[in-house]
Length: 277
Image (cartoon, rainbow, N blue to C red):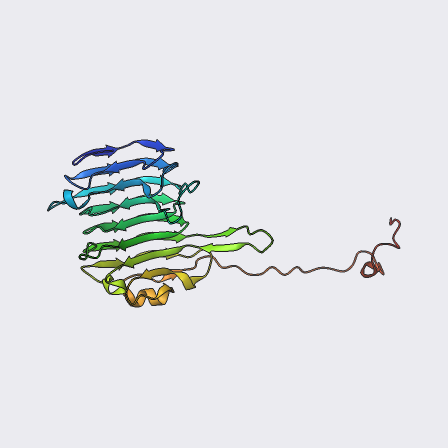
């Protein structure tokens, strides 16, 4: 953990029980060129890189920077967890009333959630690569009711590759779990909070290697539509990019030649066959 104005650079953090690195969003803090893996091994509602400020510690002109880090894996520990408890684990998590954070040029691989911005303002999330997110690539959420505490945020030029996973179901076909590129939840504004000066999504690259395009994003709040496709998302965010499907899959048709054994009678079974030379 690091206080205001700290520099946390060039570290390797593996297998932490809670967050890999905790930093303050005040005083020009810098978290750079660290490698984090296997974080949140014991507790959820955390991340590889995490910041929380709280109402009482907010101050004007807060700044901090999270740049050039590599974050691998991280999954919620749900054994013994009470029903309804938070299972949030992110690569980078900007939490309650953090302000003025720049999250740029980070690589996040196989996270539950890539970058999570929660009740935070003036956050820039730019040029990050978020590959194989299990639940969501980008998640912005505002759940306060006494005002809008998620404004002037920009999510720009990130590359997001969501993941589709198959889960075994006893006695049935596997069930497919589809991650979304974006989750946007806003308790008071819903999709109306997607706008310049509030929460702007611009020029992001969405790569759909697999799975249905129908669930590109999850928009939650008053008047929100739930899961929406990429075209609906672009209507809400006209400056964002269309999704890409660079991989194309075609069925394989086996082409067989002539039978090597004439009049084999295989269609009648093998009972009359003793040997063949």
